[in-house]
Amino acid sequence: MTRPALVLVAHGTRSTRGVDMVAALADRVAAEVGPTRVAFVDVLGPSPSEVLRDLSGPAVVVPAFLASGYHVHTDVPREVADSGHPDVRVTPALGPDPVLARVLLERLREAGWRRGDAVVLAAAGSSDRRALADVRRAAAMLAATTGDRVEIGYVATARPRVPDVVGRLREQSGRRVFVASYLLAHGLFHTRLADAGADGVAEPLGVHPELVRLLVSRYVTAAVAEVPRDHHRMSPVR
Image (tube, rainbow, N blue to C red; front, side, top):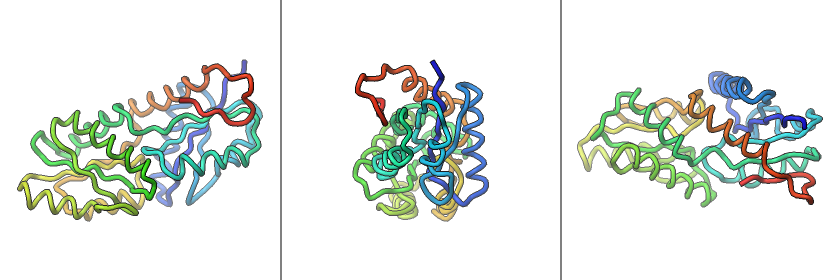
């Protein structure tokens, strides 16, 4: 049986540093599972459908998104369908997941956070209520690792905005406030966090061994799952 190729689908960014980070993440995953391709749903290419058309064997699509909103529920399935590829499995998105909470905590500590400091989880934002529910779950997971409440702020689309949450926490508690960047890679959204007024801003999740293992786990679970007899084009794996 041919091992499926892994197609890592990310949002896309004009930040060279962000694109390089996604490429580095894919390289680390490829070292574990074999052929890995990168596709983007916005800003730049190649698109998932373009990558899938270029593959002759089975494929596993892993949406590298931290919450399941429009891109996960609409863009990815549409791209898979448009590709016409006969054997594609799509995994759940990366987040929320306790693994990501542990990486977020490590990034906070690297930024100078200490127990007792307030934390704002900074997410991109979405108009999809399912994505916002995922962010709330991510905040609860991070709170369980920090031992304290974690507030949520959004960089775009949803409210409240990160600077407003940072200001409110500082005024109400008098504590130091740190921002946990719930973003995969560097880009415009992460750059905006520098102006949020926090005492420290953690780096994005980036290329972290635990994130690599999570991606590999998503792939392996999908690759070894039994294929239903009526499987034909796209098979979401839960």
